[in-house]
Length: 355
Image (cartoon, rainbow, N blue to C red; front, side, top):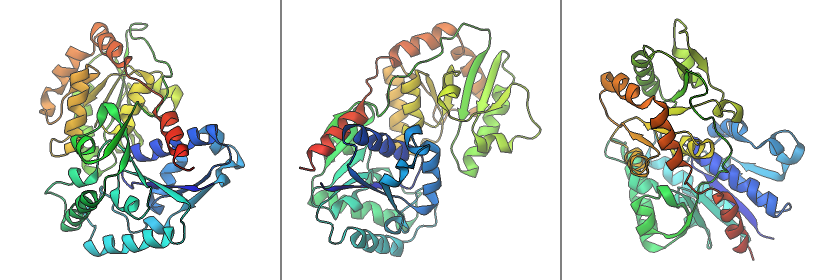
């Protein structure tokens, strides 16, 4: 049987989780499938956080071959230090990794370049970086954007796309295979069982986002009868400690306690929102095309509220309007309509292309 080579974008956690969920589904269907995961070494540590229990707790992790050489020069869009010559080296790394691998099938999450060097490669995700890179990125990223646009011009790729969130570049520039969310409906907490709302605030990993999160928390902590949970970076930045504030560990048990999420609307946290039926208040910058698109979809579908770019000083009044049982229950009922099971459908399609 052919081997499956997953190339995982080195930015954020949504890409990691989608790849791992698909790998888990592949092993459920075909226990002996051969899999390699290509990932930047700096990003590899994050994989351990999201490994499924069956893979983390057994020797089965050895069934996956982890490859970092092919991604050591890949773009990490969270840093401004990327240069054009790094992209050229990355192309050579990809070609070397796939050399003499005629039986390999590449699945590339959001990145066109690795897919271009494999005859039957398939893209996966909800957007393409060539449409996300904006003028505030440095020249190295602009070159990547133009190169990936050129590759798309020369070849139309199949793309396993998250239907609800697919951006226009995916629907118009690829042969899109629409899929539901890459998660399962788990369970959720019904608000109203206590007088205290439980709110998760997660703002992203950069220093700028942490500072913004601290400002937001300062505004919201005055709202009574709300218990706040925050991600590790935000928690470590809070001095002195604040009552009604807890560290969030992103476990299934922790998510089941949450009534509402305040976050940048990346696909990772949105997947959690769908899985655990948690309405989301979308915050962040209006300069990021993906965040703008995702927040608009959330608002349109009634899954939450688009607060991108809003003056932080009005967040307290906005939250007071939203932190009400009837408001949250209405959003939960809409969110419950989202379809899940995309990983299993993706896995079946991938296996069909191996024959």
